[in-house]
Image 1 (cartoon, rainbow over the protein chains, first blue to last red):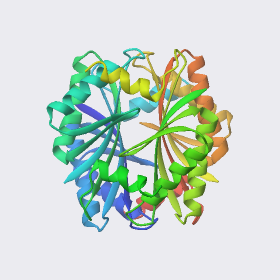
Image 2 (image 1 turned 60 degrees about the horizontal axis):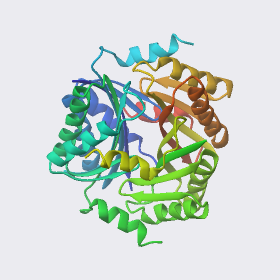
Image 3 (image 1 turned 180 degrees about the horizontal axis):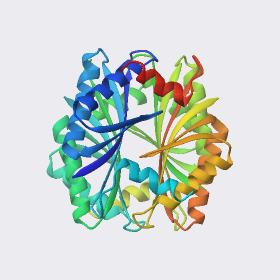
Image 4 (image 1 turned 135 degrees about the vertical axis):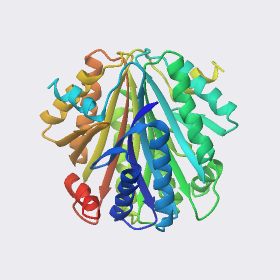
Length: 98
Length: 98
Length: 98
Length: 98
């Protein structure tokens, strides 16, 4: 099952600057070979469900290893069975209507 | 790794009444033996990371099998390494301060 | 316009225990006279759109005043024009199907 | 109070293709003069809290007017009092660490 995910990992109790933790999550997604795209409030990821969620778990493990005692993560996960749709297709379907 | 999750599965293109799909997700969580508690905008679930996310995947599979062609799900996932905390502990920690 | 909201306010950089901030947000909702119900990963609120979102803004203001330099909040907001539906109705519509 | 928001408006009961509704929300943000950037699972918006949330309310009103009887929207809202930070700054703070 293919999934498109929006991921926002928030380490708590490590101060207000969390860029290095988010950067490490980008590394995890890169190592997993998943297509991903950062934006100002999270990261879009697409791929096989199991691979995507295994990578999200590794993000939690890695951010804890970096010293964050608590993490709260927001995920949006979209699946569809009617047709294939990439992250770029989703953006295009809106832009072409404007 | 223990996780507390807030889960909100939204089937798209099946009309405005989605109660039966949400009820089926409750069944999935029940069958998985996971502690869960419904509220007005989702369901809290606690358990082992792999078991919880396997159940979320089954929710998507089951809701697609029921005829929903598209699903968008919101998940919040919390982990902590400093101490054990149950869903009830989280509510209690707020209520006792009021 | 009536809205049902799920609200999760996360103060960043104030340590891993954030119960007192969440408790203060409960006070804000109470002072606003809004029907609200805490759960393990947020708080459900129902009421007029403008009143609910004014209260959410006050939550941010209050939590900043308490010393949190950064806040990230997750909100789900549901509106419908086909019929009135309370937070309890939403839970009932699922429970009666199981 | 300045806010950076991630917005994902989901019309329910209007079929699986919702691009025209999302496109209309882009129009609303444009008309409001707000800096915004679409991505594959939502739209980032930055601006004054009151202006941003007034625009989100107009998105709900407009999408209902287009015929959607039910809408469920996910919002992430970030505020900080320690310093100014734009949407681009947030992305840069991660990218420069990789």
